[in-house]
Image (cartoon, rainbow, N blue to C red; front, side, top):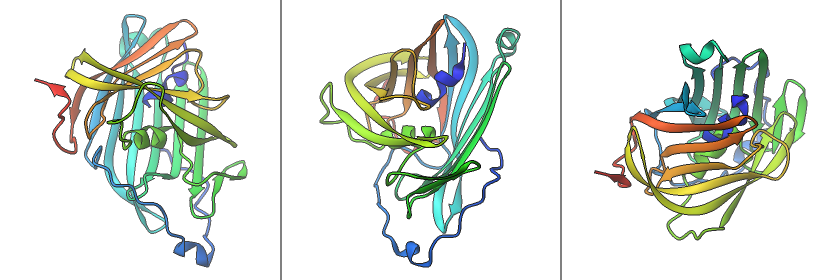
Length: 267
């Protein structure tokens, strides 16, 4: 089993050796987009039980611990961690960390790092995003990127800012995601609405499905379905995906620091 197939769907802090490139003097005057959103804020923490074929195999945590400054801009420090349980670690050890620094006003990333430790598999990756000049820099070189390109984690949080109130099944939103040395098209398909119960409670949800055209971090052997609360917060309540040998599900167990009331929760 490779949980790295699953992580982006839920979808840290390791120093990245490549420093931010000096921006051309006139690039600071480029006006960047502004997105008003009430979905999340500093202090949010979401804890999930990760199940593998009816076994609680690990714990995943999304958190926004602080605001950091990058290129003179306020950014959400968004962290995502996944660790296998002590019992499951005897079979397969997972200790993954992801971090993205997301522009508070524009909801796009300036910097992304990840450290994957799954069984004997090891992989580190980082990228600096010059969103003014549309260039991504990694330890392998510089690459052109589309405007407001995302990483795996920032794309997930951007989806939380979307308005699904008038969406109909089949509607799609197109994003762009950068990974390693390539930008990929990511389509997010709206599937409908459903009420589900998890340990954190019962919630009315919207269902979305990320679709990767080819390659990239979002690619999976099967469908990835995400349940988000059907309100302003769009909190991820459940994620389900197929892998080569079974299925992996993540269900919300507890939450704190939410940016306002959760109207979608059924009392």
